[in-house]
Amino acid sequence: MLTWVLDKIIGSQNERVVKHLTPLAARINELEPEVKNLSDGGLKEKADQLRQRLKSRIEQLGGGLLPDGSVPLGEIDPADEDALKQERKRRLKIENQAMEELLPEAFALVRRGPIGPQSHPAAFRAYRDFRHSPAAVRGRTGQRGRAAFPGDR
Image (cartoon, rainbow, N blue to C red):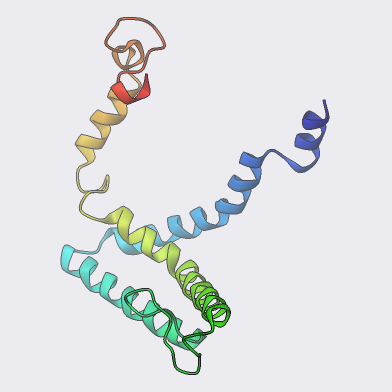
């Protein structure tokens, strides 16, 4: 009873997640027309530009980790583990912030990529149609409600 009341007041966890992700999905969908018409070369160029923007944004925010995942030891004593942990946490936060800012553009590029529905629309339509077909619902055993894929049993 209490759970039902709380779900009605603040919403279920799924509703809160969807509410949080809706603006991100809207931004990605806004970028689709811009990315949709890119050639494969243009797609690669756009991806390279995005990588460069990510690197420069990380530097603007105060720097990230080294390529091997370690903290640059500029002013930090290597023997001070607490300081290293704090600096690593700070730099990871910077990297995450920079990636969050560029996430819609990156997702739009990946969605348009050579394995996306725009490249092979017939294959994706066939997969979509198969997933919802009666044969897929019955599965191999012929029982209704059984999954068609072995991992879904």
